[in-house]
Length: 234
Image (cartoon, rainbow, N blue to C red; front, side, top):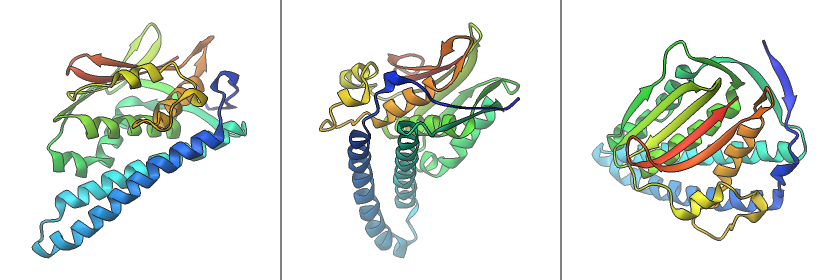
């Protein structure tokens, strides 16, 4: 079964100028770090010891790519032109693909990733949007973890619940409060712009079934004692 629909949710209140400012802020920081890493890499490559710098390059490039994808998706959503292509996918395949994409950085920092997902677990979702959402969450977990990340997916009350946890210091109080904010209420001058969280909420809400709407939740604690990102899809 394949369904196509578009997002119609007036509660998102997208201010594209704010989204653009937020994206430029994040992309500028990533580009600066990319340039620094390239400079360092050119020196380290002479000694054949460039693995760590290559990992940093890949990480920042992934963040930049994610920001650009989010920017495009949010622009399309503002114009009511963001297609939602729903089909059935294996959740374990999605998780393993995200890990593969980030393996270089994981190896560089010696980060351990544990997965708790049944091989036969499937769900109906938009693969591109959900993969991008979860990859952004995973990249964030890699940034703040000490050395462990835990990914879990299971059914709860006929809904899919995907959780990404790390053993870092957890979300700040400001980030936890931003869960309830709309984009026009987010303070773009703070250290965390909230673009990724807003994108996650938008994509989650685009998944609707049986009068239920997808949602995201941020918590601290859990299995590893750090941050917990919880995505629920009906």
